[in-house]
Image (cartoon, rainbow, N blue to C red; front, side, top):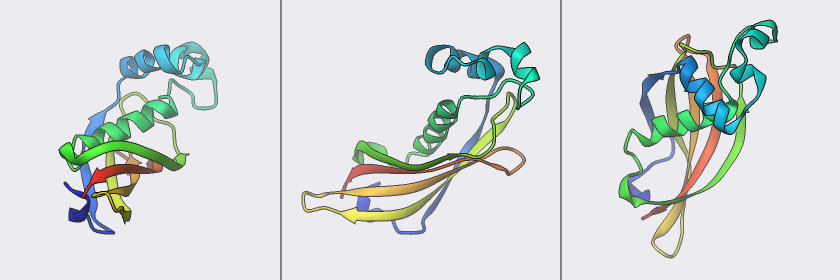
Length: 141
């Protein structure tokens, strides 16, 4: 979609995705090698009582689910900003995540482009918010 096709308040709902323990451990092994993501025995004794996904993994999955809805298409030029990222609840193996994207700002620019800002809210299968953040992108008008 081009920038001019979006409206403030417009909502997009993604398909869902089940997070596996293998996915959590593979991502963490490469990008966030902390015990709560990799060491099941130690994680079981910790605050979350089990392996949890890295917040960065949750962010990446949230963005993936939004992008797969196809709203940006070929009109997207580049991501420009992430603001107010909040990791509200841990994501456990077996959690099924779904993203709600809401257009919260549109700024047209002179060069036939503009900045689109979408508030991403990621929910688990219990309808609990696990992540929320604003994502802005440069898009063709």
